[in-house]
Image (cartoon, rainbow over all chains, first blue to last red; front, top):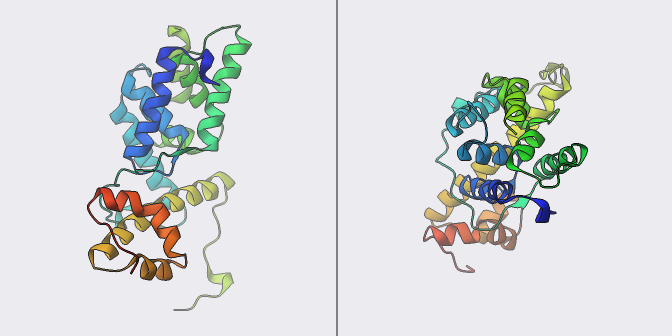
Length: 149
Length: 79
């Protein structure tokens, strides 16, 4: 699947794997792609800290909806996982959307920008909800990335 | 306090909120498991006893946590 990815796009994929591993996550999720994109500076106006903050806000909000206060859990920082994380459905879906988007635009190579748009295009899930909770306007971000391509 | 089904809180009205809560709870449970398993090993618990407490086999605990524990200098034998 990755043969048509540019070096930058492959970097995003590799960095997302590292993000998941460092966070002790059992799988690479769409949010790890988002963190990787932000860390590389592929999201104009949004840095890695903004994304991390948004993901935290999204988690607090999701748990509050069922009456759980995230602040009640004082867990130690996650220990990095040693086993290679698998690729979750959310991350695969984002990459498939990136490929589809490039095809629809007759772009031969899949760039980091395509990956960013694929991640941002999610209708449901942790990424759109976190961006919303963190006050990051998803459609405006999409347009900024699309304009820079 | 025992609550009857009728007294339990309703699931969130928006399906997206209930589903997002499931994702967040799984994540929280994973992190709680990592921290609790590590704590138990530090307290001298065997993987067999940890497995019994979690309702899984010793092998399952080893497969999921073994490498991470070993990397933190917490290797347990087959006791």
